[in-house]
Amino acid sequence: MTTLNKGISDIKKKKKNIIQLDIDDSDDSDDSDDSDSDELSYNLKDKMVFLKNPDKTQDVVRLDPDSNARFSLPFRACIAGQVNSGKSTIAINIILQRQSKSPKFDEIHIVHGCQGTQEYNSINPTSIRHQIPHYTDFPNDKRILLVYDDIEFTKMNKDDTKKIVEMTRLGSHLGISCIFVNQLYTRILKQIRDNCDVHIMNRPLDLDSLNTVGRRIGLTKDKVNYIYDNLLPNFHDFLCVNYTKNAKYRYSKNLYEPIDISKIDFKKK
Image (cartoon, rainbow, N blue to C red):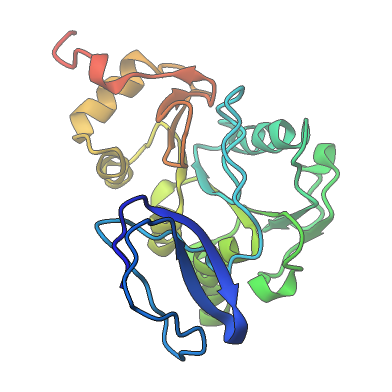
């Protein structure tokens, strides 16, 4: 084998769909290149090989540096808050930011628990439906957004639960983004929360939700209380925790105002 001293310069697919690494190296040996081999062969020396996932049909769209609300695509976000706190307004703001310039969503589908809802008419959704879809119901050559609002996750049957969990796990492979909106953070299924990379939360009303939020951002419930008391005191304030790649702010108030957790003096009254 040749010695890897200048890194991997290119990755090419040769016949029989075998991946061969082209090495830029001046130190040659007598090792032959068997391109007909049935095995995947790499020549490595303390280097990571980054390969495109063939299941993921679309390139990732990185976060827009001009707006913290234009998340990298695809993303999965959960939004939780009290009645009339502005949960759907937050979701619509995220959508309007993405649709303000390219690359935009090609299709936006609203899955809503309320029959006849007009809550999302302002964004001209592709469809408003009341049945839980499967990720295979959508084309894999378009950027899709699904918004699940007012869905009673804890009362779904096994088939719908499986569909929605698979959407969070596998939908991103097809370029599908998801927003889950609910009154309580803990009522959003744990499998969904675990797969979300954006968490937007109004002040929790119960200790269970407060502890869960704290675990999500690595803080005790007392420190979470401090943040809501001192930085997010208003009824319509939301804490946004953004774990998408290259996020402009990890923590923010109402999507746009950055919060530097490291600079908060939690002992200050």
